[in-house]
Figure (tube, rainbow, N blue to C red):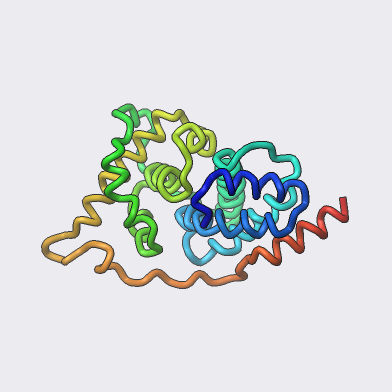
Length: 220
């Protein structure tokens, strides 16, 4: 994962111009977090397939993208969300929604709350905790904390107001902090959770995406 957004921005711009090595760098930097987001929408079983479809669209449309690393993460998240929702509609299932958006009128998320949960949310097991949250909170937490979007970009991805996203993230992180703190009777926390199942289905690789991208560009 690239820690420097300037490097990711440079890689995105080079990939947009057809540099396949740069595209692999972008893929390695963004895919793990994007896959985590997709898992919160469709579950482990279908996440790899949906993420693969999202990356194929990203590769196909990248030459029309214009922006830096932050904008790319938001753009990629919107593509992944649209593919996930298409998948849910095809399967006849809808994501569970945790309450009416009109309730999301509280204060923005506090930085110390996010800081306490940030490190724990980097693990795969934490995604199973996020799955316990209402859907609006789960998406807001993953987009803000895991994918790394700011409130404005997350709001654009979800089609909501930034204040609503901040509040949903605040509530979700507060609940996660309680879950991570553990239940005295169950010895909870991340260690108490069963290991996450390995997702089934085809796995996308940067090589397969870049190969398809090159083929798509030739066909255009």
